[in-house]
Image (cartoon, rainbow, N blue to C red; front, side):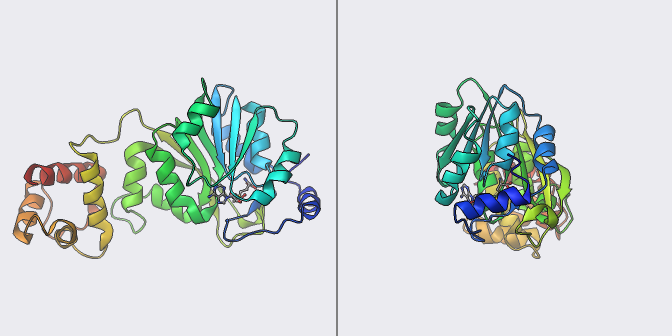
Length: 286
Ligand code: SAM
């Protein structure tokens, strides 16, 4: 069954009385080259145990199952489960789980369902949960790679360079743990219903060790969050908002000077290396 064929999709959805839900980010693919290319670029093979978030009616799941060792597909919408039971009936290496990917214990799921396989993520993500789900998937530290379709503007934020408008705390978080790369764009016409925005497929390959080394990882991300909490403010003022109970403005200005930054520097000017230096300098005085 060609699950990207618009006529096949319409017949299936009518049979099960399915209606698209905007709040669940339901935009299904209707161009088969997209899941084919996504699977190819992710380098999926039979040593991989794939976690897919949001299989929909299973067009990507079907392609993943052709090459992966096993696919575990987590679908929130219970109305799609009978559809998936039909479309994936002949796929022995696919297991569908009805649940919320944001609430499922992913490390426990990997241990239980994908023993002996290398865990990776491949998905056309529901766009309304892009940041929380990527944060969860990256910080659980279990995946060799994460290859997903997301909104183009979020992909650009992830790959942004210092000093640009797209650069922010999420850029630094993703780059600390992974090496992100935008692979290709997908236009709204490739989906039903059509989203308002262009999408991009992005791969995030987990680094063997984080991009920079710091004394205290939690402090690094506290400093980064503080630096971007008031984007237009200079760094000394943004840091005061988070560390004002420990330091006065003069102390923070001294720390910035000690790290080699100009007095009027903003958070968006600093690289991850710079933030590591700053975080360690703050940590020494806490
Ligand atoms: N994979 C299909 C495709 O490419 O055509 C569907 C992708 S659609 C963009 C996103 C899917 O994620 C929908 O099937 C939606 O019901 C599901 N979904 C939304 N929120 C979810 C969540 N929190 N956990 C798991 N699945 C979710």
